[in-house]
Picture (cartoon, rainbow, N blue to C red):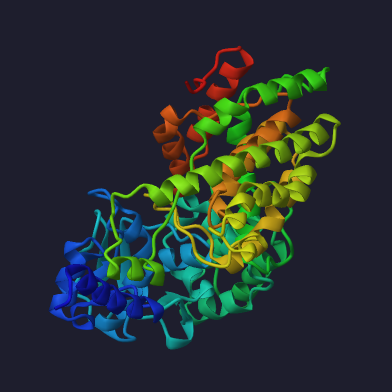
Length: 516
């Protein structure tokens, strides 16, 4: 007779076979009742609604949101496909956000369908899908991305509510910047006789410096007999030269976020004290803070069923309370942090020699990362290929509604990030946006927080600020401020949070206690 561990291993194999086929939204019919109940009991499955489930981690605390946020978009795509076939699409505003590289988990996903019930369907952790019985756009105006049926960018701009431009300016401008001419937009405007919308879009394109597109909209609408009054729907102007056509929405998003946030950072972060006269003394203080800095560092991990876990369960070796693996990883992480800290010190030395901090970080951050995880490769915890560069898989942030960029998008965004960092002449902006946008992109599978703090401290050196430790005791404040910047595009709490810590460091008041 099979042992309980063997039975659980059999159920895990069924779950893994679904995951291997990229099935995230698991219907009751995908698993037998026995397997389903066994996986639910052991925490490997969570129920989203009656008849629908997602994979989960047995180590998750009650109320843990990470598994759901990681599954949200794939689940919605599969559920809506099952419900409506091809007779549905995401609303224009959320279509624009997704196409602008913003995968934020919304409290409510609004979809259109002729079969809709005009009511919400409750999901997990306060999220829902609202079905609106509205006419669908023409088939030619629907695009499919990752299983989600979206308004095309041109159709979405025409049908989006006016408030979208003022409430989500980065998303709107990112989409606008992807157009090189007015032809696609004009097809919708002329066909529907949308003179008011034409005035709004002409003003929107002119706002981002696309005067030619704005003029073409006005001239063509006038030639067709429509009276158009140009109206800028944005509340602010853009003071950055965008490429004539941004080939990647992710690259455009980073440029626009930087420009949108930098003014608030300048107003909320302490002014630079100026470069130190004694570089040797500065580096001595950096070395003195190492133990405190290393102690307060933190990391975030994800979860997925693996063949190794299945075999451990089969052998009866699975114990969710075991700390053996964690301790081994922690030892490797401590050694890696020491090696990375020494590498970062070399970068700080270069900055103190008046090298461009952005250029130094661009050239050296790969060295920091390889040092950070080199011991784990030596110990066989990671493969050598894991240190080859930016991640090749999706990654999710613990309990965050912000979904980092897809792997292909990381490769578009990171060069622009370092371009902005190198071109920035205000050290306060380099400190705050250097840290924030790095972790917003999340270029690695692990270690992004540690890398972001290393980068922040290199930028601090470039402004003459002291090395600053983010205390583990203030982790919740830290993560909350990052979440507000990522989700609400409000950088002020994060800038003020870092500024308070930097002020304490400059005043000689340790914000973080030395361990022991």
